[in-house]
Length: 348
Image (cartoon, rainbow, N blue to C red):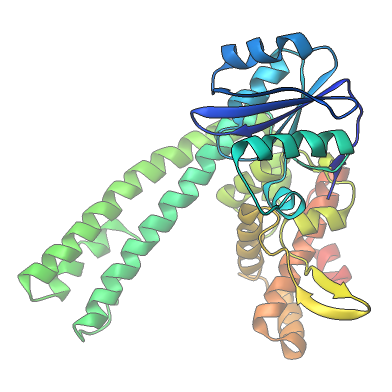
């Protein structure tokens, strides 16, 4: 956890919402000089903070609508800090909670050097990252439809569907697997939605690949050198990591990828683990997928995982491999070198 510790003349805490934002400004002594609820508007915000812009820092909790405020502060040369939502929840909890109290607590955390910082993703790659996340969402919805077709066959105690529904040609015969006309109609609707998803996802992937090559072709090639990592996983890693130098150590990077345990201890006694939701869920998924893909057509890799599985079990063995891949990616991007499978297996 990193805290914002710089000192300023004024500290502005904002409890931000889609239509309203509660603004609280403290001076260096902690006195409230402004506390007001305003509309979520750039003009209103700049007008309210106008008298206090001399050496001002603005802090806001990370939520879905922070993009415009970060970009506005960047254009206006105002210091902006994004607060880590889960860490802030742990720090400034209280018996009574409302927008007015929250805004003052955020300003107080800024002034006291206890404001937990989140990464302010730069705008030039932000939209592409969000588009890539949307692509992953659509792929999961498409997979749900495949599962629903197969579960429908199980529901009516029909033989298992043996054709590969991934491709349009073979799956066109799937409705003939069902005899009831209403059930067949359900399956036809699912397949029609799958066809629509295929068209949208195909066009989206082409656009994403073109954009990613234009924005950072070198890093994309480095990530693609990992055995089993294709264009989609390499793009997810590229846009979710963005800049490897924002992680001081490899342990910080592994923790951000949700691939380390976070033990809770007190008085020398272990109280379990926590922090499972702190970190990047997309990187967790990407490295987990990369670990499975790494084993395809990779006999030495399979031998390594089988050895780990005998000691830890198959699930934990794959988690260990995913963790080792995060460490490899960290040093690859730090040193600007491609993946070396022989060296990786030797050190693993």
